[in-house]
Length: 518
Image (cartoon, rainbow, N blue to C red; front, side, top):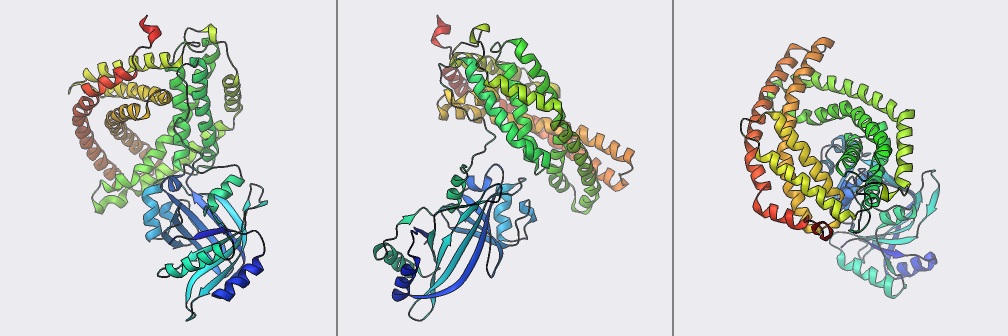
């Protein structure tokens, strides 16, 4: 039986007196109580149906509790939540968190500062059958000011005593007139600060109308991407985890793609500056992101080697960490520069401006027409480039196809609200299957070249023990073999994407609009 919450509206002494007359009641603890809720920036725990909290109170050590959003216990552990799941002591809590959080850091989402009194409810044999909590919660805002929330009485049933818990609940409702209330203190506290759970996602989240002018629709998409970029800026500057830079970088890449793929919407003289400056911003992030990726892959690199030589790779990780710090410092300097501030300021002003829709060929046209036409064109290019690839094609041909697939994916995601979710979702999934193969092949191709370069740089810096260079050599050989295997899978992946069933759906979904057929 899950815990139950009841709204308190005063007269607590009378309430407790009534309970004591009906049941055995013993005060167990009384005093301040603090609770901090944690999640990743992209709400991985909440999206998985979980809430992680750390409690501290009178006579109580800090403990971390993982429960479902309905209040059902999942796992528990001692200690302060670390930055990452792997910082927890080995045990059920760490095992539960690791596959959900992956590389994301746990961050405090909200803090409660409350006062509570806990009572034990006893049966006729004076055995504890239930705990009852009187809670006066408050939520701390950014200035550590406490904002009071609704006082409540909480029933904490104990295993094996559901019947007694129901008896107390019935007494509270029928004899004391208490009304049940939502148990979600987490969401109530968030709402008090003007927030809602899962209020961040890196996905493009816009709702477009088919008849709206393309210029207005594209501004909406670009504004959403700017919001994502800015949401991740602080996390990049603080280097909280690798995914802040990933999402920041993807927002930049999508912005550049939208400006180049949806053509003749804005006057060239207005957007040439932004194209150049977003290209600069994208290049700024490349080296830091590359090093993030190699550090994320490091456990996999080690696992590819025989157990007896895996530790030989440790100097390589230290090399990556050293250069990652250097590249992040350079990046953060640029994010604080006048050039970056000028770009963001001018871009915000541009997106907020209504613009002159009549000045460009596509600006005033309905977005449904422009989007379908552009998606059709890029889709045909994917089919053409993919069909031309043979077993003898150089890696560059697959890379070009990968870039074209990425453009198609972005276009479909920008404008997916114009189409039935299930149908466009099927096409995006089919495209993703092809992209996964192309991405894996390109990543392996680049990794082989980059690991060779890193080996040379380590040697030049004097940080390369002979054992490490040998281990890197064995790693490159293994990656070479894997690249060949992935390359052999391409034909089947492309054939699955290009099958008639998908082509028919593409033609139906992105068919020419009525005005185009005249």
